[in-house]
Length: 524
Image (cartoon, rainbow, N blue to C red; front, side, top):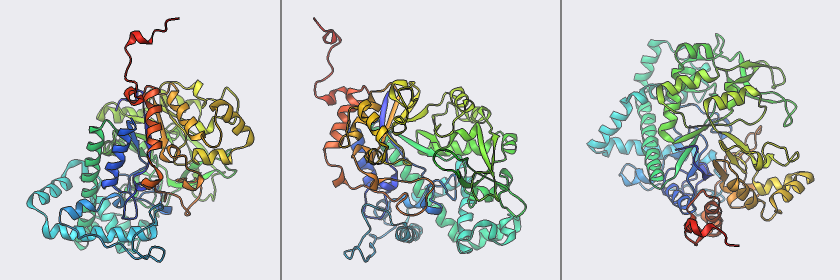
């Protein structure tokens, strides 16, 4: 994807798609949504991380920086191949007719049910797969791009199950410390479980690649999301503990987060282990190169979350209960991205440059040539000089009405201070009933190369449809789903018209064709 073209798109995580199986996936509804995007003149479909979910059901605390989420594997293709019978939906107290909540993901019920279906499909594959399918599976498992992460991930998942879900540093010490005899014995003892996780990842890759081709054939680029840090309880940390700041008991000595700011007097203590950048540099940043290469198999472009951490990051002592105590430490800077680019070529990366941003972050972003981000919801707390107001945008930027971490546009309006509402209403010429369209129109009409909107804003939904509230766990975080009856014909029609009128889509969608240049000269 050319990040310098004039285009727009919609932010909708795969798990928010409709479908009968409890959570959105790579099944028929994903293709339906791609068709809807094409009809609306959109050229970008942005996802959140597609890695397995972690604590709090968050896709930003995954057990692997490389693996795909088992929850996104669609069941319909597995049924069609004869590996799985038609899934029997569970009978729930709130849905006696059978099935799952169509508008929220009940992870506690969905996860075990989905894994049961995948185990059934794996058994069916081994019993009924064709020779061609078996060959394709074997070749995928042995491909160089997979072996660098797949073997450790699948063994990690098998051992996690064998240890009752305990984190890896509480496993048998020989396994936690990766003693070769213990690993060899574990691979033999858990061979069937390892094969299951290989099968799941193969299904994920095949289905993700098929959806990507479908979207690309319709002029739609996929935008992924890459968290900067990895989880402590992850195959990555277990497989290469030497690349992280851990003590002899496998515990982090310092952790990631952000210092206190206007959003909180305690800051945010994320708890992720921090990288030993010096050791990564000695290896030519090979781990990061492999990670980016993997991301580009699944998407055409991706956003790097917390980009400022590559310039400088907030280091918190692991013993600190909050983020007040810490220090700024210099990150790897442009040398990291230069090393990746030498191996992979030009990098289609968008830098999430929000929060406490210093000149070195801007210098790194601009030195790499990456677009930054602007959030319209943040624009109305000051005066006409605010950098997030559209009249200040540079071209090399992505403008959002809001992200997955923000309230919806309608919800923001309802919660905003009176001063912000007055300013926004004046600047955007809107009120509560149309603030979402006014924000979308302002973003589309700006000079920013790219404009992206959460589907909730295209539909004009309120706070109850928010995807995530940062700094909180549980509740409705990450659970939101839409249904097609929430959409109807009007939002897509209006979005298509605004996109065309702003020069980001097919001008003929306006119903007036493309006038000849001579007709554009006004005769007074």
